[in-house]
Length: 478
Image (cartoon, rainbow, N blue to C red; front, side, top):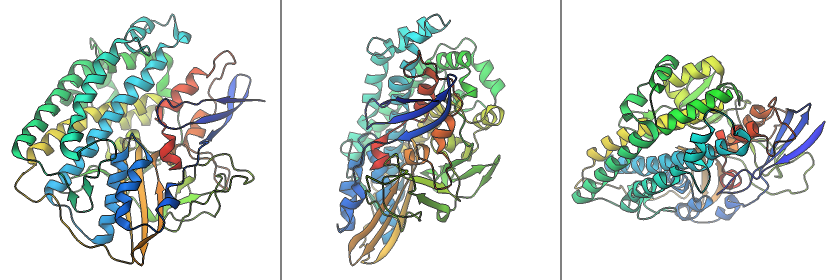
């Protein structure tokens, strides 16, 4: 048995190390390590509840709006406020902008450049991929960065700034729009649609979002020249639709609140069936984290560092749902929501690298038309925010969907001050360590059994599987 340490994998946020135990050129076991402690949760103790809206978004510069939305939702649960329609639409638009921009960055800047590595020289698609996606020289960067920057003007318009906006409030948004600004919003969404339809899909968003089966996808790929088609060609050649399977248990808190329900429903997908979400089934296991305490509900959990703890190997906790491992992210959202293409793909091959990347790109095609509809529903003269007092003693939970998956904030207030604040980030679910039963987390299971040739550093397929989960460790250790 040989031990190899690979990483760091991230290029922007935080560090990630993976310890591989290999034998005969194959991964026998994987141990995922988040080697950084930050301690945002203890920082919040004793603060006024409203201070969370300022402090919590600083956890991450990529998904700060998601952190803000979860905090506002937890405070809304305390206050009993309801969002006015404009406030709900504004929350959706700002959250969707951050999530779609994250999907775009992951695909163009983090995932696809790995196909341009020298290890793939000679593959039939290599020259085209390298010309398009090779880091620092590929043509895709010049296309995607201006389009992403223009799309992110939505944040300046509706949230004042990004990251770390203060516009999302428990009762709505602090940034109402005038009619002229609504027209500006419509124009920038239209420009982003043009970019997606020209470069990513080579087709209309509605056509891509309507793909309902693997045979539909195979037929659609013919004569397409967009970047999705190029990804599918490389992924098929490497067999990535059969690689990277975890538990095939998928969790979603529900994304984008509509007048009735969510655009993407909440729930759990397990054993090929959907189940209603039961927040009380969530616990955090600390057995292999450098943290003190026992397994408990996040509402009663603690974040107390214990750096010399035996058997521990990460600062990441191990969330469990009814005692089991669950995967979260765009693939989980679309499995729970019931997208027919994604469900057939997982039914055929299981959760995989291809399924995770395809689900993210499908969300680009599915969500932008809804953003256009939400923008049309805004009424500048109607209320944008409701106001109310926070109670001195109460508990509340905020459950939202970030780009990477399910994000939860659990808040307890006593005597007008924060008594406890616990966060479970999406990457905490996907990159969790073993629990007290020794059950590996989702990524740890997905890596077991992969080829890991000594000549590859890091092993190419290991790298694809890790990136398919879109790691962000600063949120994980918050």
